[in-house]
Image 1: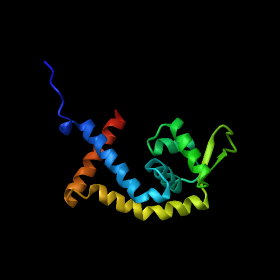
Image 2: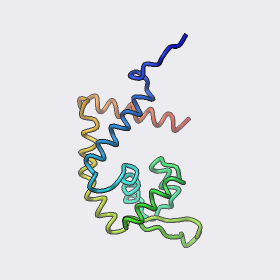
Image 3: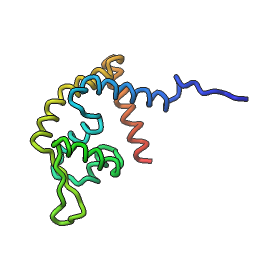
Image 4: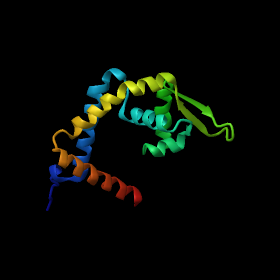
Length: 145
């Protein structure tokens, strides 16, 4: 007997759909900036930790180091990130935002605040807080496992 899964009630499906919606809202607001959510996350993390190494940065934004290298390469080709060898360990690549990268990041930050609000807009303020707490617990619980 075949029992199909109700996708409308499947957590994986709903998380995937919410991710699609989140990316679509991000792109609608920042299409002119020619930046992806992952690129923004890397720029934002670099702003907080200039001179961080590539592997630590990838962990900080929860992205695999191999793929983050190509994302960083695209940011470097835009002139937003500089990558240089660690003077102590030449194999380690350190990263900093360029002045253009800092300016690009600054110009995106108010849009990203609006994006976050729009993503959560179907929920009441109380539901937004509850959703974010539960979502954070879900992620933290799986990261710890």
